[in-house]
Length: 191
Image (cartoon, rainbow, N blue to C red):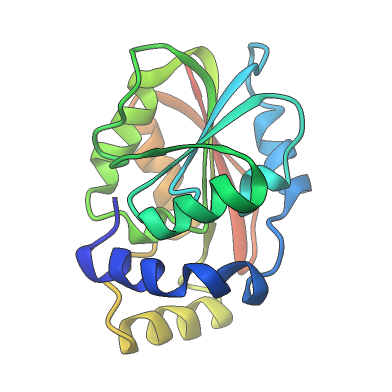
């Protein structure tokens, strides 16, 4: 799911991750999920790591999918979440089997972003929503984050909100930019 160096990094920092990262923005995620045109009973938190984003949501059955076994262990042991080791570019779920998917603060780590979007489209049922919460590389804080991640050897590839929305449209989603700023939210509804 991540570049190899990124997975190793997250495996190493897993015990500290939740202590240094702020909680996920549950309001922004809920605003994105509200665009779904179907009931959300089953949600995948792709690249969900320790379950930080899943912890900000209530309601659906949530499965965390991540390539870092250390982060998944945190999601299972400390949050009681269901976790599946997997690659965002090859999700181990049936076609149309979930109602929503989130990718929170992780899309920039995915080595094959187009494959991840395509897989989300495949596993989502019609009317389901893919909500991506990311960092804008054109924002001053985003530029600093890009430089910092590259300085420590991460293979991060950040995208601006409109560019990400266009990628969702290319994959057959009906995209919307829900909010903008250093952290932004884009949602795509599967037609």
